[in-house]
Length: 165
Image (cartoon, rainbow, N blue to C red; front, top):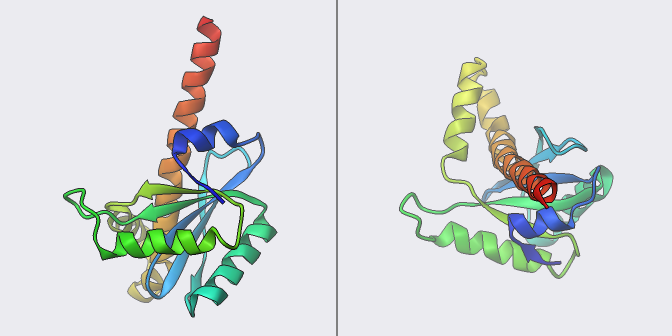
């Protein structure tokens, strides 16, 4: 397993490969999946965290079922851009996953993704209890959608460069 930049991932993906978004929390892992054209992120049910070995098994079973080509994982940077304990925990999780899978991981700055997810759920008039259940997957969807938008931008630039050559 490799940790890639979004630009490196763009160079390795084949058409029709879906990618997953992850919002790693202390109690849950929010999940989202792209469509095969990698245009839209859709929230999926959260995984309840137990211990790393079980979390990894569930995540890899999800990846196999959904034919995931790569993971975009939210990196919870502080608002000032510094890395706190949650960033270290996320990096440790990815390092541990590297021993269990060859699927690449891409870190994605997730600042304000939970805030955006909360606002979207409020706008949809989702009850407080349902918001609590769905917030992590909604945040994973925001993380993944940001990465999908960037991948699309990279692909458009590559096509434009090819047309000019």
